[in-house]
Image (cartoon, rainbow, N blue to C red; front, side, top):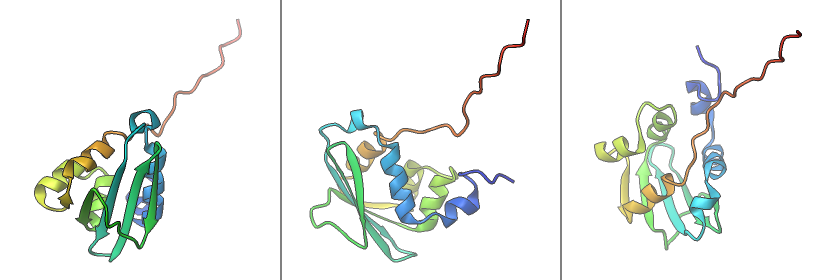
Length: 132
C-alpha cells in the first residue's frame, strides 16, 4: 500500500490547518493578482469552522472563525473533504450531490479553485552519462 503524501491514512490524519496551508502553497500568485475572495467553511461532523481570505495574491485562513462579509459559505463534512483530497470525488461532484452546500456567491469557490496549481509528486532524475 502507498505510504506517500496522498496515502489515505496521511490524508485523514492531516489537520485542517495543514489542509488550508497546502491551499496557500498551491495558489498561483499571478492568477490571484488583484482578486479578493472570502469564504467561510463549516464542517458539520467535526464542528470546526474556518474563514479563508484571498488578498494581495496570498491565501490566509483563521480557525474557529466566520466572516460576516464572506462571499460564500461552504457547509460540508471533513469526510467529504478527505474524499476530495484522496481523489475519490471532486469539488464539482460533491456540489452536485449535495455533499457540499454553498450559500452566497457559489462562483467565488470556482474562481478560487481555478487559481490552484496541481503538483506532481515525482520528478525526473538525471543519470550520469556512461564513460566513453
